[in-house]
Image (cartoon, rainbow, N blue to C red):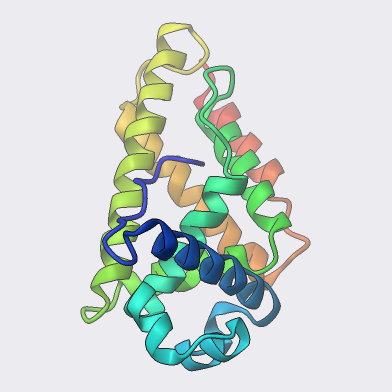
Length: 197
C-alpha cells in the first residue's frame, strides 16, 4: 500500500547530494535483500556500499533511519496504489503478495514494527505510527465508499474495520515469516466474507 509520507530531504539537499543519497539507498536495498535487516550494521552496509561509515551517517544518521528509508523506497517502487475497485482486504492482500516478492521486505517491516515498540527508537516509532494512521485513514475512506455502494455491511465503523484489516494483514504476514505455507489470501478472503452485507 502506498499511503506513507515522502521521506524528509534534509540530508544531502544539493542535486549531487540527492543523487549520492539515492545511489547509497539503492545499494543498501540490495544489501538488505541479501543479508536481512537484523544481520547487519551501519558499518557493514557502508563497507558493502563502498562508502565510509561517516558518509553513511551523513546521509542517513542511523541504521534505524536507513531501514525506514529502505522500506519507503521499496514501497514507492513496488507498492500497490489505492484502487476504488478493491475492498480494503483485497488491497491489503495484494500489498502483502507484492511485499513477499521482494526479498527481505516482510522481515524489514517486522523489524521496524518491533523497533517502534521500544522507547529509544523514535525514528521507527514515528514511521510506524504515521504509516498506521495513513493506512487507517485511506482504508476507512474505502470502507465508507464500499458501504455506500452496498459492497460492505453498514453496521460497522469504517475506522474500526480499517484497523482490523491492517491488524489481520500484518499479523498474517508475521505468521507467514514463520510458516511460509500459510495461505494469507484465503484468510483475508474470509474477512471479506464476514464484512459482506
